Length: 255
Image (cartoon, rainbow, N blue to C red; front, side, top):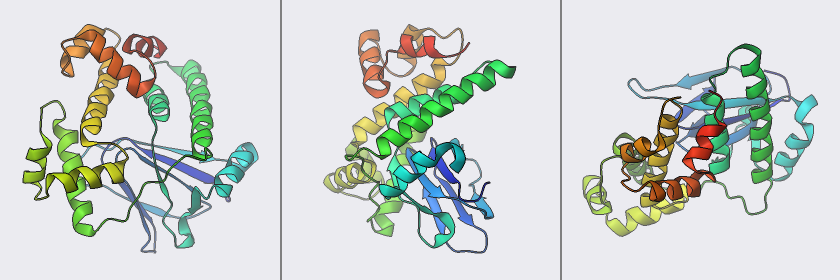
């Protein structure tokens, strides 16, 4: 870790949590969150729960290479010093950024070819992140929820993450988590920036991405596995999420 460098962290699975050693300050990223902070030199402790699957990507931005990006993020107040007593502001991962991260993780090249591919995709990821964070319309994740509501939302999200292929209604979720339907709809949308239905749909599309990473995977088979009997409807939903069709996404993967 370089002094005066910036770190960008993306969470694609269960919540990622870490803290600076010797301090009470913690950072918690839920699924679909990202944050950027001036890291400098410090010791950190990661916190994991047994039995949960964690997928996250962290980038370290060296000031000699990314000074203009770092200056732009500071002007937008999109970051903070991790060990400066403040929790870094959180932002939602966009579809463009998520698709690029998954292409990095699913690279099947070897040796120098893999290094070249990942280097190019990492630069693409930094460029997309910087562009979206510096957009005047970018919005940070809102965190002004009570402890009880935050815990309820986390339980609802985890239930969807673990069973998104099985149909569940908002009425069932609200009953199981002791919250009226209208309140659940409202605080979920305000906190995560999308509706519960859209979140379920996104999870299916993310799972489709994982299945498409297999070299012999067929689009028509993947459509059925994520709950679509009509391939055109599946392609439309996938394009809306990632900006490309399943076939185009599969062709972009380095098999």
